[in-house]
Length: 375
Image (cartoon, rainbow, N blue to C red; front, top):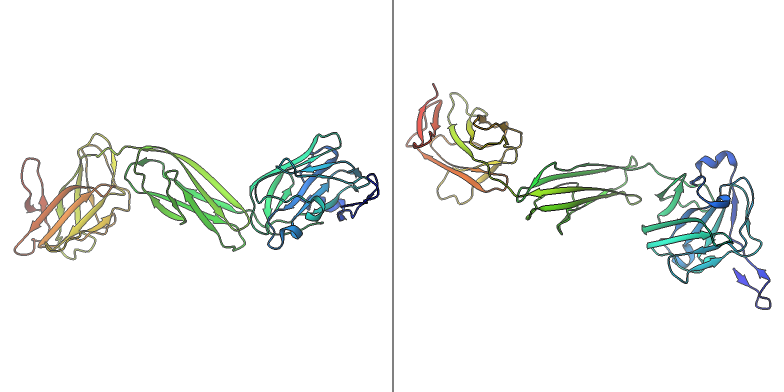
C-alpha cells in the first residue's frame, strides 16, 4: 500500500488481489465455520517460502459470510509489538471471496517459528487468530474447515487443497526396568509414497532416528517418550510417560540339558530352566550364551525371542524355537544371562567322547552336575 505524500487522508492503494469462489464450491475451501466476527478468517499462510521471503510470503483471508465485509480500519498484527498493518479505507471483501496480502502489503516479516497472527475489527476486537511453532520450507499453513493443516499445495486466491492425512502407528513397551533394552517402533503412512522420517526422544538425553529401535534406561524414574513422524508436509507427534523401575533379579537356574538327542540334534536339543523365585518370569529377552573352546574369548549370545513364562517353582524346557543355541556333544561352556546381559549362572562340561544318545546333564540342589539316562 502506498500513501499520497500530499494528503494524510487520501489513500491511493494497490489493493491486495481478490478472487471470488462459487458458493457450491465452498465446502472445498479450507475455511472454518462460525469462528470469526463478520465471517472473515485467516485461510492460508506461507511464512517460509522457498524463494525470496520479501517477495513470496503471503497471508490469505476468506470471507465465509453471505455478505460483503468492509475492511476499512481493520488491523493485522504479528507476535511482535511493532508488527501491524492497517487495512486501507474503501477495501472490502465480497461474500465467499479470498483476499491475499503480499509481504509488500503488510510490510512486517512472518516468523518461521513461534509466530502469532491476529486479525482485529475496527473496534479492536479479535476477529481471528492463528499461531504456529514452526513452519517447513514452501509448506503453507491452511484452514481445513475447523482445523489447521499443513499443505504443499500453494493455492493463493483459491480454495485450499490438501494431500491425504498421514497416520502414525506406534508401539511402546508396557513395562520398563533399569538396564534392560526396550523395543520401540513407529511407522508413518501417508498414502502418497512420500519419504517419511521418524525421530525418537527418550526423555533422558538420548535420541534415535530409526523406525524400530531399542533403548536402555540407565536410571530409574519417570520419562516422557516423544516420537515424531514427518512426511515433509505434516508432523505427527505421540508421547507416552514410562515409569522405569529398579531391576529385581529373579532366581532362575538351568537344572538340566540334553546336548545329544537320539537321531539328528537339530531343533531337538533342550535346556530345562527352573524358577526358584516367588513371581512368574517370562524368559523373553533373557539369553543363553555359549562357546565350545577354552581359548575362545567371547561367548555367542543367543537371545530368547519368544515368550516362555515360568511360574514360581515350575520347570520348563527351552528349545531352539525360543533361542538359536547349539550344544556340543563333548564339551560346552554355557551361561544363563538376564535381560541386562548379566551372567547369573555358568555351566561347563567336558567329555573324552561324545555324550550317549539322550543323556541328560542334571543338577540337583546340594549335589554336583551328573550325567544320567533320559529314562
